[in-house]
Length: 206
Length: 206
Image (cartoon, rainbow over the protein chains, first blue to last red):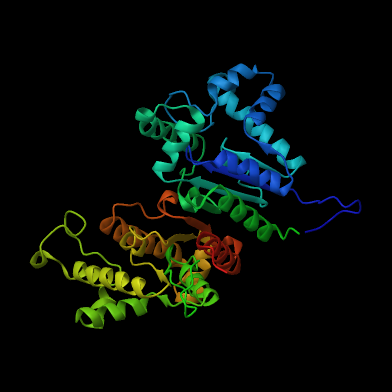
């Protein structure tokens, strides 16, 4: 890795993390960022996008990773035809581009892998987990009722898949879309270490 | 990891490797086995299965990972209804079970992940690669004509997916079926090191 005269790393790299609901993917992303000493984005990114685009942050919250139902896919239409969620997607798209030009970072969700697909310095990660682990996390961390947890998880993942497949030309959760997919049954720490090791190896860090 | 009185490791572990055609998965499996000092199986396994079952090795070669077309799936039928490829699958099934009870090893293909799904000491790996890399390998290592390589690869992977999905209740190449999926664009060595590190971490080796 090249280092500039003042000791700053001059290569920016990005780790994107797609994840099943309840897999621990967001938490893993935060720990990876901490270990590598780089910023972490998920909701923060949305808020930044809101500021840049002039849309209200509250709109972003309600439209976060939802697609409103209309026929056809992607963004191949004029601005006046765009739904609010498409505008949100575009604002995030621009923000992800801008941030990753300025600094190395970890981004969770938001189709960041698709947004950055022309950037060679990206590691695209997907985190999955056994259903019993996801149910446990949904109950423990998100307060979902035990009897509703399984169907809630399936619904959430269906939405994530729908959002991803709608805005990208790729297939959510399919191994060949990513650089690295890890099942978090090895434990959070095992996932974090595997991603950090992989990233260091890939970009010849340290 | 527990060690017996005579210093032998008393836990047997298995690494199964599913892979896209031309991804380098088989070669990666061989190197992982070498690095961990455990046996490697792919065609060898088939031959061993042939010896055990009394079927001729030449039959195994022609039926290797092919499924002959008949309606329905799986193995829920009587022996006299079985096609030859189903008999081959069953012979391999038994051999995989037997080998993995006796020793730690790496097994490439053969739905080994499905065969061993009740075994807790298994790491299921899937190797994929960008199409351009797979084309290069198909031409270089398998002598496929450049103009036919892309369609040949698609056909081969369709067969692998068909074989896998036919005999198992899982989905070939879907991240959530595996412990670890790696895109070999990081390079063969990077994949080998990532799998070896993961395995050591998982089973507390060394």
